[in-house]
Image 1: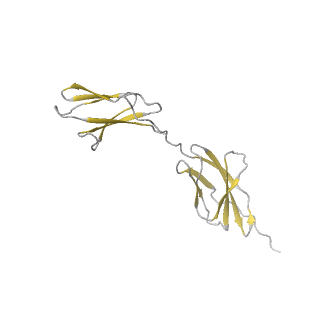
Image 2: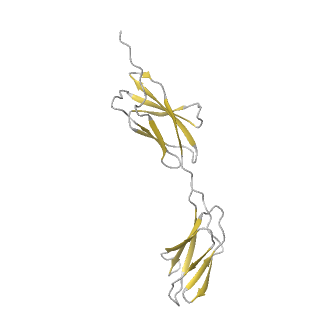
Length: 178
């Protein structure tokens, strides 16, 4: 009678890394002597479990786990399978999905004031949650706007070096780094 060897996890373990706000990629680090038929994948939102099986059973080097919540840490384990025998789980490894960007309102009270023959000051109201503002200028209303500057901790921007007697149109966009 020959006994079967206990299957072992991927020789180099595995890593988990965020892809976007709802996906984490598991990457198996196979060694030259991996003989497993496949792997079973498990996840949990708690380090101590319980761990639920991810519907996948494959020998691929990576697996994208999708449908996850933004900004949430997940824990993963991997169990090898060889000739129908389940091996010991490897892990857990953790990764946190990326934060969803915060939806910002448009800056209001936009005002452009001539400050000299070649400069215009653009001002606006603060937008809660904004990390900064991008200021755009066009020569026509509703035309093609080009980025002319940014403001981080201010709600105004001085646009200088403009030709005298030319009308300019501005728009301001709030942004955050999240």
